[in-house]
Length: 299
Image: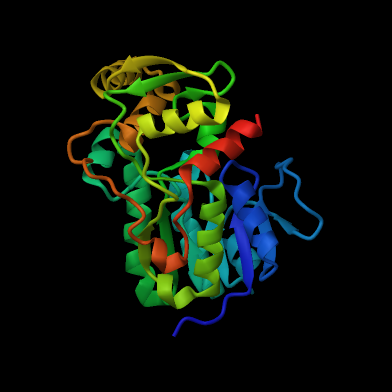
């Protein structure tokens, strides 16, 4: 039987994922929330949040994790391998639930792994957690797709709210699961409040599964303007990205591959309905036009 979760610690709470996760936990007022940072970190947090600054060694983490019921990892891809150490320390400290740093496209999908070899690190963490179930630690992983509102705001989804232009892939008719930051936070809070339902599961959630054409229509309605559209193809984007990667420009080359995995026309990724596990954590059913308008009005 999974016990009640009250004390929750977030690792990486100063990052793009960590900040909204931390805020959702605080807004719920249901947990004693703390964050873990390195001594050199300059991140700041609300006064109600206890900040633990420590070196990231297993010995130090066992001490810091004492008394915590759940650990939420929101670290970036450079720190993904370190999560095995977090997991080992969590087990020794008696932590009940571990949330690995997933929060992206499906790291268990072979087509994604072919495009994004570094996602094997995410898959390895899930496999490691499954092995460690026998030692008393439960876990929950969240596949969210790209973060919709954040991605729309910064242009990641290939729409520029500043110039009202779009770069659409293929025919613009490929549906892809995507999740708002608020829904990611709500799913986490639900999983913490109802731990038995999400124990030892990899959950695929989504706010909705739109196409680029549907997002464009919502944006044109929200802005009352006709947008300028340029077209590209998944094949062209992946080919150019791989050339960059081969030349050592990993930073530039990686992004188009992530986008291809998220919404490109990729063999093995057809029919991505997404959100099949929404009911497990009580999310979904958001209105695309309302979310798009809220983002557009906030610019």
